[in-house]
Length: 306
Image (cartoon, rainbow, N blue to C red; front, side, top):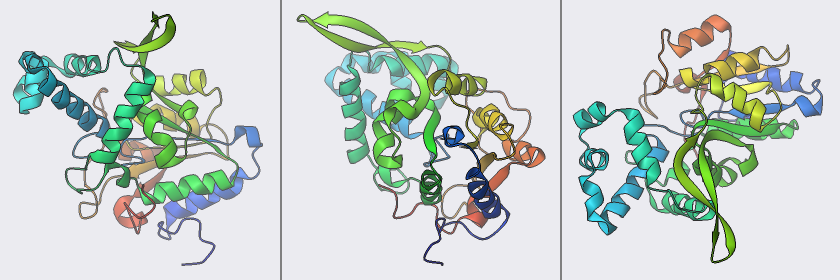
């Protein structure tokens, strides 16, 4: 390994060549156009056996049910607490998700962020048995650093909750809260003892940040078109298409989960979108770079995770 290798966890091959070629070409792009966006779940950190935010919400439910046992009688919460997959399927994802969102209604943004950071410190991944902050992909951290060295502004564009990812992104990825684009919750402005406060509601603001909305939300919230994007599922397809068409110095990168030994082997799918074609097949047909965890990464989860 060369001492000046900025991508030490990336094996020599076509994917690394594509990434290094893009980094070199980016030097010719005006600084204001050097924008890179990364999906979060399955792209920057492990999304199996469940999404990290899902584990957080289940933890919040368990804690709330201990304090208020009557919550366990609500059909959505009862099914979740008992892991009743048949009941969950009958209730439907939308109803179950709405019930989970209600758990944090009435919290201020600061109170919610504190709960997230506490969970990240105390919760452990069920398979790896390490804190959730240690399931970040080392090669992607290296890529982020390489992009920063080229003067890139880096954002995280996630289907997950905006405030959940904002609470973890500065520490895990070095991405400030204002550069996180996700699914938004509506807030209510109130006066509490004469002081203004902002409180979370149980309503989603606008559309879930999956598929086409990712592109429109990038423009609405970041205001600049990315020339680099990384994703791993059909929920990232439009973002990757939009980025790949941004000009000759642009790159769309798909993460392929094909390493059963070091992570998981599965076909990434969106939980909210219908798919007619494998996202890996789409990537190869479109000429995007595809990073095989098995073949292109010497390390998956490494010491760079926090």
